Length: 118
Image (cartoon, rainbow, N blue to C red; front, side):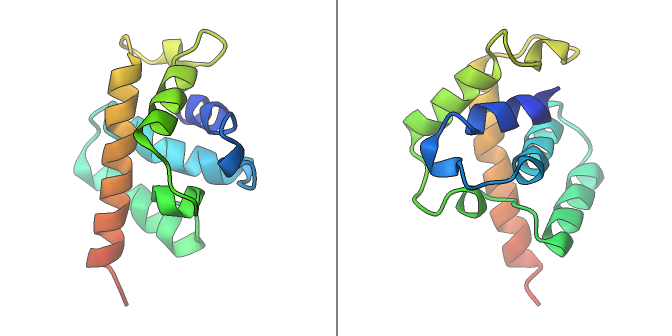
């Protein structure tokens, strides 16, 4: 639910239009795992897979022009819109929670990349 809501929401930003559906859903999966407070091993598994196959794990992978706080809040609000699927999460989700999960996913992706350089 969250992963596809994140995809739909990122498509509202013109600077993200070059991204493929699966790329944004992959990043949305990281956001969903963090939003749902999943175990660290699950987050690491998805980060490892995404990194291995070249899927985005950071905002820099999604948008080379940078994303502002306002951009991310717009994404969070759109993701929580009734036209998306966020209401399918097993708990109520606010735009503020989504914003925090977006920022945390980006930070985790950057940290993972830094720690796992080869």
